[in-house]
Length: 145
Image 1 (cartoon, rainbow, N blue to C red):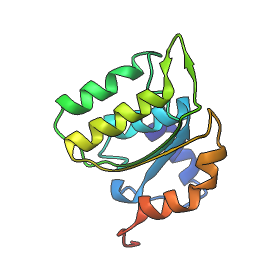
Image 2: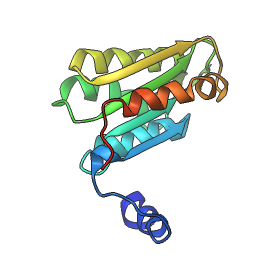
Image 3: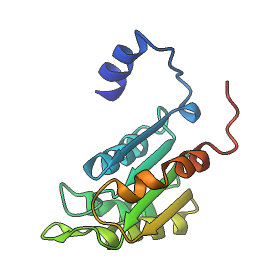
């Protein structure tokens, strides 16, 4: 859907690149895990991910990413994760722990990643406060086409 519907529609008004190194995808909460999923499944289309308080918990198998990362050949994805110690803890899982486990798996597998863990809850407050630095890190070393 992203590649077949959204990008072509947006591309009618904006000049978009087909270079996956020049594309980033981002989201918060369920959008954070969705952004990761797009890059994980299609690194040929997206190679930069920004995930804030990502829902890497037991909602439709999101908790499985930690093991998949560890057991799958590393992909060309650069990842910025943000999480908070006051995030959700409910029947689906523990968001702070899930984001920490994602970061540990990325580190184990040698991904180019950064994890910022703050005190915030399940909101955009911490991620929004660090967004400029997050974007600078995500695009560091990238030469404009």
